Amino acid sequence: MTIRTGWVLMIVFLAFILPAHAAVNITSEGLIVSDTGYAGGSLTVIEVVKNAGEDESGPVTISYYLVNESEGSATKVPIGSADLESISSGGDYSSIKTFLLPLDLADGAYQFVREVMGKETTPVQQKTIQIADTMPDGSDADLAGSGVIIPDKAGPGDQIRVIAAVENRGGSDAGKFNVDLYLTNRSVRAAEPLLLGTWEVGSVPATGQASTTRTFTVPKGIIAGNYGMLMDVDPGNQVAERDEGNNDWYRDGVIRIIAGGSETITSPALINTTTSIVVVAQEMNITNQS
Image (cartoon, rainbow, N blue to C red):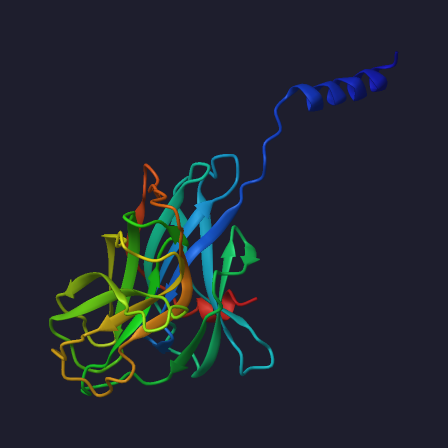
């Protein structure tokens, strides 16, 4: 037997004896990004990612970009990244990052793009962000629901983790107000929305955002089916606004209520949350575009 043949046999032996490790699979379980932004203003990205692979992920970097859909070149503008700690198999990671947008960012409609470890991936929902070149100055507050992240299934009586965010698109600070969160089932005729709970918001600065992570209990008498989520922002009209028509946020079919009693949705043993403000150097808009 030659030396070369011996090496081939050794490699084959190791392939059968040593355990195979599946590739790390990082999936997006929920994403909240504002629909509007301003050149030189801030943009908050809230995301829950999950390691759907069989191995621990190791450190994970998620990079975020804006792509101007109105430009023929469709150049990616980097806005920042989230550096996550290692995620165990089946575990998730909640990240909240606020980025400052470049001052010379042209107005227009931008597609929100994300990359996981340098590879572009599709978020759970496509996001288009309308960028304006001037920020509102001195105008009334303008509250709007930014979004909700909720488990995709639960049972009657279960406790579920809900991440919700609201934003102030106006030029003045918004004081104290409430946000009511409902489950809605439009397939049941005359069914009333079911209140999950109320979030008391202290204040939101002009062009700013507020977010919360809460645990709510699914009503025990709920009917099985697919439910939407309704976020009623400032139902008591506590804040004087320039436009109250955009307060509510609604998405259909975001959670499935399972029949036959409670199916417990357990939270991971370790849930990490990061919050930071990242200043993006303006030269990045020129040198890092690709």
